[in-house]
Image (cartoon, rainbow, N blue to C red; front, side):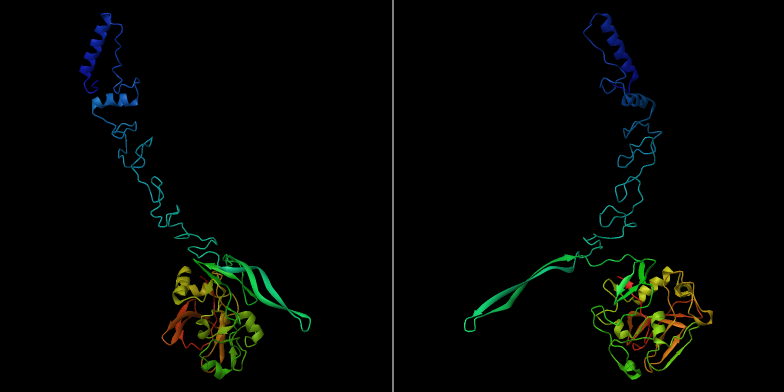
Length: 383
């Protein structure tokens, strides 16, 4: 039946009526409004009838095109009812979603994904899985021999059978303390980085080897190896701490931690525990940026006490940087405790090395370089 020609349809109806009047009772005439001949006058038939007046439903969603905001069959929402503007699937397959990318295909949008890749069995992004060896059992194997001449059995070890498994190395949540060389270090999250919230005081490298300590002035200025000292521990000391005698090594250790030359910072045995490192120049830059930029970062990093001339900071970052002073590279002299904080970076600069500085008379986070035999404070940052 041609739904587009009402005159033809009308003629067809008249013909069916005439046949019925002539007694052809066995002939059944279909409903002229059932354009698709499915036995039901449905939405499709009505839309077909409406098409006589110049409108269509090209996407077949039951909504007249003149009222339909989306007729694109490639749109993810062309069947929406009530209809809406055509949309597309986002990176996660969500119709009109806001995700622009899912680079690792894990179903988490890149701007919310904390790992571009896969978490290993230890929960580390793209990690190697359990690596620490856990010895579960050691069985010693023995044998014996009988010395007939002296009527004695001799028992001796011939080997050992060790049962072990691999376990995940310890993981730290920032804010939890980190134990190193018998001391628990506070930690703090600053931006996307996790830092020790106090200066390093270890006397050993991470592998347990001792760091040379208590070097006299001449030894300190000439050593090519790593070394550590506590402020005021050798002769030659001046200080400007307002509340205590910083040249007292016991007091200085509690307030400032230890001082290290850059050779210790650069040693492959590492000053920081596994999973931590001495930050680079660029990582200190990121720290300053997270605190609003260099001109104001210093104030937010300095402790709220211990600075002379009312030079304390607000410590809103939680970095808790004290004015720990330094030991000079040539004279071995201790100075500037109470006024300045010197913090090594792990970045070399020709034959020198980069460091960061906080000052009593400024809110700035300074960047400079100096001789590698200077004694400065050290912080650790999580890998």
